[in-house]
View (cartoon, rainbow, N blue to C red):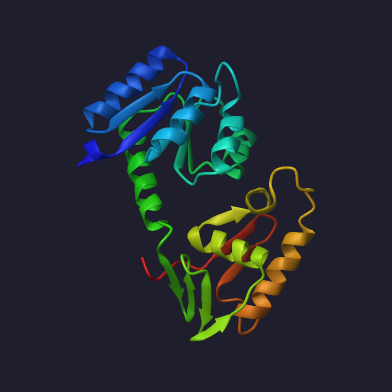
Length: 231
């Protein structure tokens, strides 16, 4: 079954590249490898793999820059595999859109488990899915939102924000990640515009915005959307 799943490995260390490739092939995955960041971005665009394994210490461009480029056009699952163990490095990669972060050295069993988890998440986040929870319905392909059967009209930015949270329901998305996703990395770091838009969204979808049942604030961190009951 795994033979239909393509994994792109972006890793410049040839010994690690060979080790991971051998492990993946032994578990039935198809593997495409890249030794540089630019090659990895090119292969990701042309082959659209199911999962990308990304090293941060690449010879031509930093792995975080690769992640930025990937997230500018793709939602492919990205698992960072890196020797960088500082908490800030992990936070930065996750803020930029990485789905997971594994520090070297790691075991084969752990890597395979992380890949399986990533594949499950990517399948539930398919673009044609419908979000449903406690009277709120979001139809992504039609860009339509209903609360208790009544259509709700959001601005373009409000819709982008709500759909981003809904597609990642149950996960805490940091303020920075949301700002980067909606307004890009060069947006002013002041998140007042985000707070204003979230307040507007709550007024439109929540019965009581002061006691939300759909979008929750994780104080000092970001926002979390109620788990999708339609999965």
